[in-house]
Length: 180
Image (cartoon, rainbow, N blue to C red):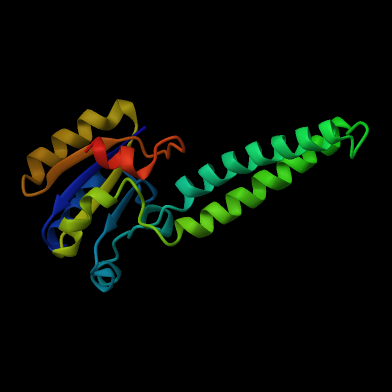
């Protein structure tokens, strides 16, 4: 699966892209449009970006879970080495690590609400100008078909990037900026 990022300058173009993507078999669940004109998307019945697209909830949640797992394992080790607990059962150790991981994911997700999605951050200057970012998730087999259709029917839409739709918890914001 790949996410294609197209940029267009007006709502009418985004509306036509939506119609053409439907003709190509791309469902509403696989493409989203991000813009500062949310009312325009609503009035044109276009599928806008979700909070998971806009904010770094998933990415930071994954990082928080990894930190929580690490903290849980360290807590288990400390409890075992200090003799505070003679022998923790495997279930107790797993439970403690799971609680730490869940707490880390929750805190990470809350932190992510305060930050823009690290994959979208590079497009912020264009979005601030009022442009429309069309994100299309395509399967490997249909990627070329979508690219050809977009090039043929929508030369006004610029392909800015192709990336994975999945978050990588090992990528930090500085690394993501440097790779652009």
